[in-house]
Length: 104
Image (spheres, rainbow, N blue to C red):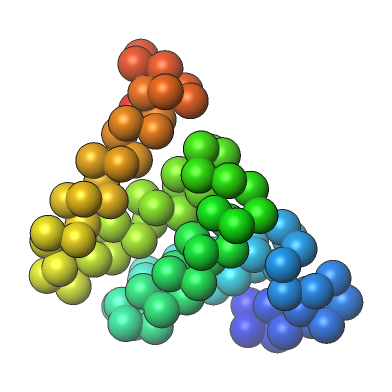
């Protein structure tokens, strides 16, 4: 169903629409939860690229996309890449959300 949702959102709203990107993120999360880490990684990288371009580096959705990708990198054993992303996530969340925010 999520694959069909993403396909339809791309057709109706376009590939760069925020709702389309959210659908892609949801599908990536399903891949992750299903243990399909390489498929999740590929889609998460695309989501992060689009969110950076459209929303900017410091938008909460972009930061969340970075966090999701970092967790997937970690689970794939790509620890140095995960570490770099997580450090960026912490810095961005401190700046955008504040030191004491639960997500920070």
